[in-house]
Amino acid sequence: MRRCRRLLAGVAATLSVEALVAGCDRAPSTLSPVGPKSDFTTWAWWGLFAVAAFVCCIIIGLTVLAGVVRRRSTKVKTGEGRTFVMVCGVILPGIVFAGVFALSVGGLVATSEPSHKPAMTVDVVGHQWWWEFHYQGTSAVTANELHVPVGTSVELRLRTHDVIHSFWIPQVMPKMDLLPRRINKTWLSVDHPGTYRGECAEYCGVQHAHMDFALVAQSQSDFRSWLQRQEQDAATPTTTSEQQGMQFFTSASCSTCHTIRGTSAHGQLGPDLTHVGSRPSLAAGLIPNDVGHMSGWIANSQAVKPGNLMPPQHLSPSDLHDVVAYLQSLK
Ligand code: HEC
Ligand SMILES: [Cu+2]
Image (cartoon, rainbow, N blue to C red; front, side, top):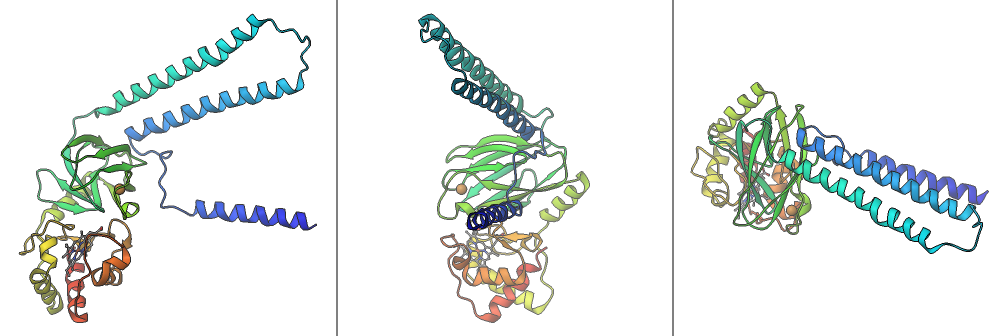
C-alpha cells in the first residue's frame, strides 16, 4: 500500500514537472518553423531522428535476439563474424554518415542565399547585454526589437561592440556568430506575421542569459508605418512633468550614454531611447515596459540585472517621476 502511494506521488510529481515545462511558453522551438531557413533545420532534425530511431530499434532487436536464441553450434566460422562486423560496423554506418553529411552540406548551400534578392538590410550590433538594430537607408534605430515585413528576404549584417555573441531565432533561422573586427552576413525571411523570440547563443558574460530580443514580423503596410514612426525624431514633451523630465535627461548623465534623436542627447553606450515608450519590454526582454518597472530600472538597474553596464543613478523622487513620464511619452 505504501509502495503504491509512493508510486502515485512519483507520477504526480512527474506530471507537475511536465505541466511546468508545458507552461513554459518562453521557450521557442526549432520544431515549429516559420521561415524557409528554419524549415530545413526542422526537416534535418526529423530526418536524423528517424535514422537514429531506426538504428536504435535494430540494435535493441539484435540484443534481444542474442539473448533468446541459443547458439546451435559452438563452432563459429571466423569468416562469418568478420563479414558481419564489416557490413554492420563499417559499411552501413559509413553509408548513413555519408547521407547525413550530404544532407547537411546540401542544406547549408541551399539556405546560404535567399531565393529573392533581399529587399532591405539591417545592421545588427551585439552589446553586453542587449541588441541594437539599424535599418539601412533610414535613420531608424531600435533596441532589442527587430521588425521585418512578412514574406520578404532581409539581409543582416552582424557585428559586435565588444565580445563574441551569437544571433539566434530558433523558429526562424539558425545561429550566426558576431565576431570582433568582422562583419558576418546572413539573411532571414518569415512566413507568418507574429512575434518570435530571439536570443544570444554564445556565452558573453554575466548577463548572457538576459540578452533576448523580439523579432516582429508584420504585413508590408504595418511595417512601413512602423518604420515611418521610428524614423521620426522623439515626440515633443507636452505636460510640465514631461518637459522637466526631458530637461533632466539632457542635462544629467543619461545623455552621455543614451541618444534621443531630436534632443541634445547623443550618447552611444546604451540603447537609443527615441521611441522607448513604444517598446513592450526593457533590458533585453527582462522586464515589461511600464511606469513601475521603468522607475525601478532607472533608480537601480543593478538590482534588476546585476552587472549590466548602466551604473546606479541617484535621482530625487520627483526627478525620477518626471524622467519616467518623459520616456514613457516617447511612443
Ligand atoms: C554609463 C552609461 C549609462 C548611463 C549614464 C545611463 N544609462 Fe541607461 N542604459 C545603459 C545601458 C548599457 C543600458 C542597457 C542595459 C542592458 O539591457 O543590459 C541602459 C538601459 C536603459 C534603459 C532601458 C532601455 C531598453 O530599451 O531596454 C532605460 C530606460 C535607461 N537606460 C534610462 C536611463 C536614464 C533615465 C539615465 C539617467 C538617469 C540613464 N539611463 C543613464 C547605459 C547608461
Ligand atoms: Cu551572449
